[in-house]
Length: 101
Length: 392
Picture (cartoon, rainbow over the protein chains, first blue to last red):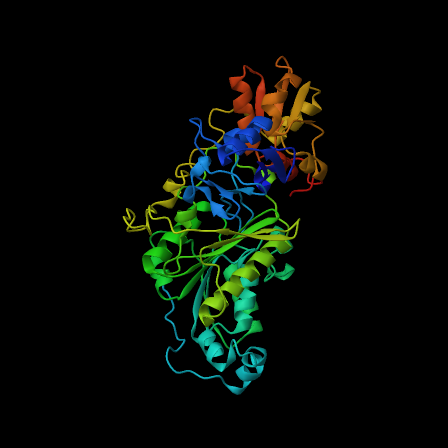
């Protein structure tokens, strides 16, 4: 199924500055794997070494958190959008997300 | 730290003639009216942070007639704050933010009570401080404080009007509302530190916190009035560049350690430790990293030493100012290390010396032996060697 994956600002530099990416996938996990295959540097920002999605990153299918659906096995329908939402902290100053090099 | 007792009266209050005129545009709206304005007058709201978010927050809540505003900020107004912290003006540079904010907000609305707390929010003072207020508004800038504010609000049963920003994106929601999620429901754990702090990826469009802070003020007023639909269970995402608002659902997490069914957190913890940064201040990033000071570097360059200057900042920083070094952004270094000649003496620098310390560490592990970190970065170079180099 075609799906659009929205890349949050802090991660765009690892995805050729793209704000969203289109791909074909059956599940949310498929889409994320394709994303990290196309953009290798994204992988360590989204996944731990043992292949789990990092706890400070939330993934939404449309407006629902996949933790409350079927996690990465959540099925995609035509026209769905996946949004990656990392935690950000900027407010009084501009300290933001930390990066992994 | 003595906490001023509330002198805002609870129970029947009224508006004087001046207040009726001041708030007339509220009073003539059925959604507010006299009843609503009196609720605002009796409300006590605590703002955590008087910076980018706190500025529009304070201004709009003061303008709206919130009877008591508390402002928690221990910082001093810096010149670089003026791009976005609109409570402050050029004359305020060097002044305590809490004092400058108090003065600005009092001038706007002398009818309200403003209490300032020039203190760092900690596990020792948060509960005592929050107790006297009805609503807490989180305008802070770091993960430990975000978790501290959340936990204190959950433990006390106070709503936490949350806003956060990053460059040109913002988030807003209301945590801690009865039946609604808390911050830990969304993010059980913070990002780990000990990773490279992305100084260059910071920066923010000045007006962005203006928008997000105003949204927080709006949500605060709605909670006080009991009007409209507050952002409970809804995460508002704002993309300023695309000018798009989106909304995601936030669920209360039944397994949340502080607001879930089987809570394991029943008191405030050590948040610096939770976020893994205890000890980071005392352990310099530069331990074991060979350093060279700007003066030493200047002396060696003047002598004609054949040093290779490696600049690990981002291209847009290079455009602000540079030492004519060879630019390889830190994130690209692993891929581009072949551009460096390990037989040459290399001095790595960045803005303040942190990223370049990590670069030196990386290169040492890659086998480079003649490598030094410019202590204090280009900022120190400007201070100690060449003041014509602009600081940023």
